[in-house]
Length: 150
Length: 150
Image (cartoon, rainbow over all chains, first blue to last red):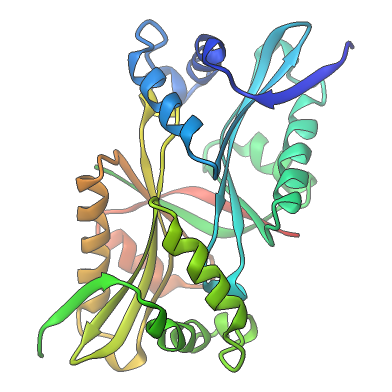
C-alpha cells in the first residue's frame, strides 16, 4: 500500500470526515452529511483550541481515517495530564489494512510527546470488535463510561 | 446544614483538594499530599484554559468537595459539544449529605448553560456505589472506559 499521511484536519476535509462519521451503525442515526453547517461551526472552534487535535489519515490524497485527540490537564494523579481519544473512524475500504493500529499508535506517541501520563477513551458497549482492538494495543478496560444526553 | 457555595478553585484551595484526592482507596496510592509542587503547576495550566473548570464546594469556609469539568467541542453528533466530569471527590464528613448530588447537578446545569449536548464521565469498575449514584442521576452506563498508562 502507498504511504499514509497523518495530519491536522483542514476545512476542506470536513465532508470526508462527516461521511465517515455517518457510515457507522451508531453514527448513521446521529449524523447529517447533507447539512454540514453545524460541523463547520464546530471545526472552527476546534481549530482555535491548542488542546484539540482533529486529525485525518490520508492515503493517495484521499481522507481514509479521522480521530480527535484532546489534551486534558488535571490535578489528580500528581497533576497528571491525560489525553482523550474521541471520534475514531476508519474508512470501510481501509478496514483490516492496519490503519487503525497506526492511527492509535500515532495518538499514543503524540500524547507522550505532549507530556501526558495517561491516554483514555470510551467505546460503546456494543462495539465488541473495537474493545478487542484497544486491548491488543495495550489499553485496559478498567472503567465504566457514563453518558447523559442534555 | 448551612449554605453551600460552588465556585472555581483558587490557588489556596490546592492543599484541601489534594487531601481529598488522596483520601480514597485508589487515590491513596497515586497522590502525594506532602509534595504539592506538581499540583500547583497543573493548577496554573488549568486556570489559563477557558474550557477547564476546576471547582470546589465550600461549606462554612471549608472545602468539602471538588470536581473538574472540561468542555470538549467536536465534530461527531452533528458538531456536538460535550462535557467531561473528572476527579469528583466529596469529603468523608459530607458523604450522605446530598452534596454529591448537588455538585453533579451543578455540573450538568453548567454544561447545559455552555451549550453541551452530552455530559460524560468514567468511573473505575471497582466503584460500584458511584455507579449506582450516577445511574440515579440519569446517566447511562453505555460505554466501556479504556486507559493506557504512559
